[in-house]
Image (cartoon, rainbow, N blue to C red; front, side, top):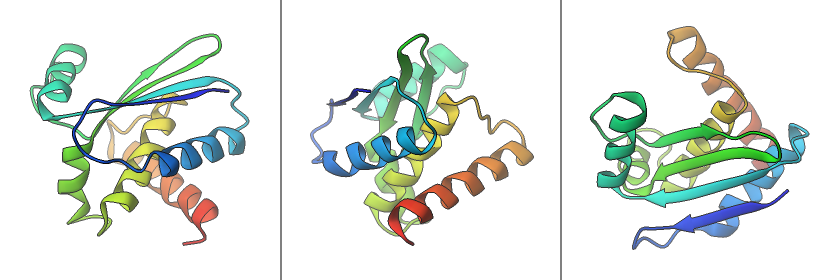
Length: 135
């Protein structure tokens, strides 16, 4: 299991937190595969969201499932995480951990296109974060 993290932004990102949460998620779900996580800005994620999902707007995370030994790739917009943190988690690090787990759940095949799916993913994400952080 290898976790590759690429920060393509000027923001200082807590890489240790990303590694810790990702590793615990993979171990917890018995996934022995590689995952790649890239941090980008609004312009890049909007372009990727339009290209791959047909949605011309900024989003917090895009998940691209892999195959074989490759679990997949997450593209995270750290600027969006910081904006969202104000209304959701309170801190950028808490929101980042939640969105990271959310993206990893997408790589497992979970979808949030419906209200039921969204609720299920939020519940799973909060439960997992509660288990690994004790919160």
